[in-house]
Structures are given as structure tokens and as C-alpha cells.
Image (tube, rainbow, N blue to C red; front, top):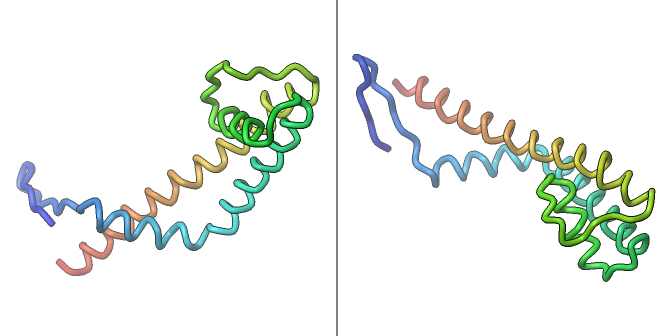
Length: 120
């Protein structure tokens, strides 16, 4: 833990290991939601594999690339169901999952600094 002074304020810096520990504790509370989202993305990946005549691994890869809006372009949807999944359903699931992860990180930081405030 390092301390820095900025314009008369003493700021305690939190180490990455401390943050990671608290972050994982927060993720524990939302694990069922994250697991459900992960399962949905994998399930839609299997659907994409059958719709697009891909190997199941490639379908799951395609689903995650679509969910997190990366879109490399190496695989593109051709059927209407695949286009619907890749354009609307999977990106929404990916945004929800990303939002939960960001919220968990912010909660972990907030908890750590609240603990530090109580100790001062």
C-alpha cells in the first residue's frame, strides 16, 4: 500500500492483488447471473454452429466474438436466425455481462476505499 499526497490530501493507493481479491469476492455474489449469461452465449453458439454448418467450437467462438462486439469478420452469418442472434441477441448478452463485470470492479474499489476510510 502506497501513500501519495496531492494538494494536501493523503491518498492511499490500492495494490492489484488487493483489488483482485476484493473483485473476486464481489463476483462471487453475481456468479449465478454470469454463469447464466455464459451458458446462454454457449447455447447460442451451438445454435449458430448448426445454422451455419460450422463445427461446434467455431460456433461458440463466433457467439463470443459477436457477444462482445469484436466482429473479426472471419465468420459471417448467412441465415436469418443467425443474423438475428449475431446482430441483436448476442450483443445484448455481451453488454449485460460486461456491465456486470464493470459494476463488480467499481464495487470492489468502493469497498476497499470505504475500508481504508474506516481505518483512518
